[in-house]
Image (cartoon, rainbow, N blue to C red; front, side):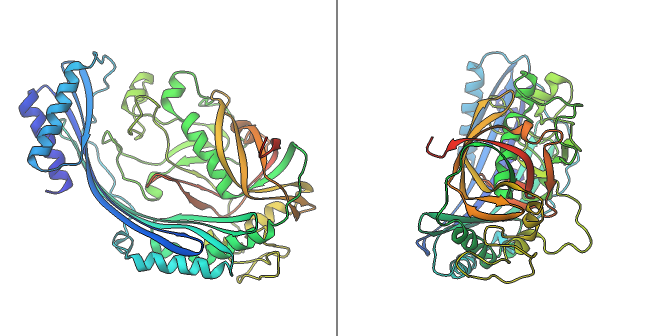
Amino acid sequence: MTELEIAGRVVELIRRLAGPDAQAEAVVTRADLALTRFANSFIHQNVAESGVGVRLRVHVDGRTAAGSGSLVDDDGLRALVERTLAAARLCPPDPAWPGLTPPSPIVASAVFDESTAFAEPDERAARVRDFVDAVGGLEAAGYCRTSYRSGAFANSAGHSALGRTTEAAMDGIARIGGSDGVARHCADRLADLDGAALGARAAAKARAAADPVELPPGRYEVVLEPAAVADLLQNLSWYGFNGKRYAERQSFAEPGAEQFDRSVTLVDDPLHGSAFPYDLEGSPRRALTLVDAGTTRAVAHDRRSGAELGTGSTGHGMIGASTFGPTPRNIRLLAAPASADAAGGGVGAAATGGTAAGGATGGGSVATGVTGAVADPDTAELLADVQRGLLVSDFWYTRVLDPKSLVITGLTRNGVWLVEDGVPTRPVRDFRFTESYPRALGPGAVLGLGRWSVRQPDRIDGVWWEAPPVRLAAWNFTGGASG
């Protein structure tokens, strides 16, 4: 059976077993994920998995329950329906049930690349080889992955939808001594991943990060590279633009208020890349402007949180939304307008140029003064006016201290450099920081955005964050990474 036939079969079983008044929705997703891992500059694992998952939600006699399974024959589907109905009988009444998504037009998935969907292991291995060759003898580790997902939705209100999508991602580090350099890229097509460019970028940054010095904690002007900006977008999504948290007054978001710098426009844009055109409830997914030129405009809602606030769903129904809340999962921080004569663009240009510490020179056209620490002209342009500040490659291990103001603590990694008079002068030991993400991006705090965005992969397939490098007036570093 096709995915749509399976979903329709589940809904029909609910009608037969629970009566015509039962409400049901079924989501069927087939996922094919392939992953090529490498460490010590050698491929050590190639794995692939393929599976079909069925998720069912029913509302019977005022009670709601959900169930899932992976057996799609008649016996498996019937068992799923029976145990979900049994669970519904034991659930408390659900007076806030928002009802089913009515028949709605669904835009076809914008992105599907057959060569990515059915990529062979040697195609991923070729990109790993290019990455390893480009690091020039440094120790290399990381992965290259491809995925193909197809799915269908059906409910007892007569609504149905189809979707399919592909994604490719590469994440690698180069290491020399105790210093690491990283390069990541997520794309809709495997052909868009350039292992050599990513390897050259990682190696240049690793070499430039050798023998770091220690700086005192304090508030520093910073230029954050896209990997670090992705952490901002992820936490803003989870804790700020979350419709449930907003309804519970646990979010900083105030729609209609100018909470960000006017250069900041944030758009959740699932159809811009590898995501289905419908959500877990069958609601259409489309671009949602969260922040427009500094003014907060919206938060994400599923049917339940949208009904509570009288706004309706924004297409963000997902597993866990009833407890954690609905969140945007494909946020783009829109880049500054590109001039007609701007050089480069995308990760290819961002990874090609520069003179790495230690004498290695990459190819490509780059701005004057670009070093191994500054792997692209976009970042070099942002650094040009920094009198004294820091260039930060990446954040990790970030944790929320105050959800309402979104104060986050975390660590830098994969390279930090002191910048003096527009030039990175020395690598710096990693810092711990404590910072309010909305405040760091607040009115007057953003001193510049790059012109080229790079999509960063998430651990979850179909989730990504896209951003240019960003120059911020201040970032609060509270101590060394071990503090």
